[in-house]
Image (cartoon, rainbow over all chains, first blue to last red; front, side, top):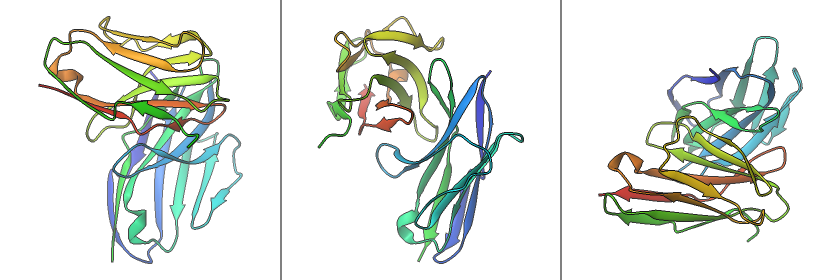
Length: 111
Length: 110
């Protein structure tokens, strides 16, 4: 059965810290890995990764995929209180294009 | 606003009643997804459409759930004979290679 596992489940840091969130996946016919940020509402798209070793970057956020070891990481540098959210990753399958989500990492950034 | 739109945003219903939710995807997207999310969990896949064709439905999905996308544009999700366990956030997403979510419909069954 397809599954996506995220770690840690929760994390508390102080403003200015750097955090690394982990996502491992076992997805049949894997096509892509997506990262989302979820605050009190629906998930907001961050990144889509399809190729190993190519870093995607947006401001203080960056992500990379390792298709050999079946994992991805999301890095956030110089964290701010506005980064407090649940971060979700999802493995996408080819063919049906459905996404399998992990349970998320809850990040809290203290001022 | 050209994002994914869902209606209603909130629904409270009595157990046993039927409910229907609507999703209007981003206009150029031919893929549309329904997910369900409960507290502390990631979104759980329910079903997926490519244009008007329903290509996959979760095996976990009860027969009380049905979804349609009659003209390949908006979609509806109906839950018949609601149960308290159906209380959740119902999320619609549309996409090409990525998936973009709407704001969700929060269902409370009392």
